[in-house]
Image (cartoon, rainbow, N blue to C red; front, top):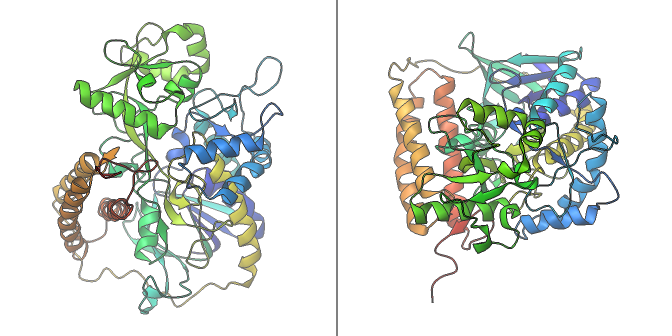
Length: 519
């Protein structure tokens, strides 16, 4: 396959990029599962943007900087937030429907860390509505090919032409990707002038996550192996309120908008506790709330705490949060009468592939947008509902930059085919499934919401053995998606542990009991 633009990932970032570049060349969008099966679909809350003059860019900027623990890139924050209204208008033109009030104005929600009501939403399934609208546009575009069940294994660089590539190699270039066709089980070569990574997050590094099973850090791991720049991986956001339902994967998300509407966090005895941790109570930023819940669970020994929305009333709950209402009812929980059992779950990576303001990575002709990228917007902790916003702003900027650059790029035709000579089929799937469980458990226990130097050291030591065993298996086995995903999860776990070990402080989502040091 040879195209002008290769897009890996079919969420809001990948699809909006594809739509914008499609007028300027042939586009192929690859997705490892069904086209709508990604993190975008599971985003309940909405998109944060300044819509009316009761709000201001400066307020949104300050909220973002405060939530980000003071280490956001302020220029990036300002650019993203001031460009937001134009990007929202484009989504509306694509047919995406945001909820309105009876007077015709948009019904804006408020979430943790926000000083104003500025969250555009569609009920409690905003991401699904965004995915629906963008996918419809993509499927109807004559210049876009959408290939489902095609799994990107590696991005192609000079390394695959026999050149030695290190992190210090100047001018690394991307020529496309090797892609595993899930139907034929063969690895195919996709050549492209421009490649966009929109591969989502790393949630499945952990035992409990709100991310879909497809979120295995593929883009970050591929760039790491290609010697591209990756940063801020220690900042993993745990959503404070996933529905406590042991065995369910992914964990069902209870949107922060419910707390924005007035729901209150409570312990097993029905008592509020957030006043012990932050004056903003249940609407404090996610890092603070997640740590508070984690601490309360450890003190009490409870498996979960509660979110109390009973006082909002049945009509409000059914109108504003219909999917949450229905999901809980399936489990015998009537949220108009019962408190919702909740616990934190791995939710979002704030770090990732380092990109500039045009979304281009340190590898030429390779862009990244959405959760797999590190733009500097989130700093040490993402402000609620800034994620979909970041994705559409950076997909737009990347598209504008790529449209200009693609004119001067040629497709490389000297790329070798994937070499599977001498490989044998792995007949013991347990070697992969058990290793994945071990990885998730050590990351959850040692590199979760609260960390220590000792836990990080133990995690690194255990991971070293897991890495060696998995590489030995990879080097002799016919490639499968499960094996490749395991390698990617291990790579992301290593990047998280390394970054956490190197950061000698507690800040944002990286909270260590060893800092500040005891005197």
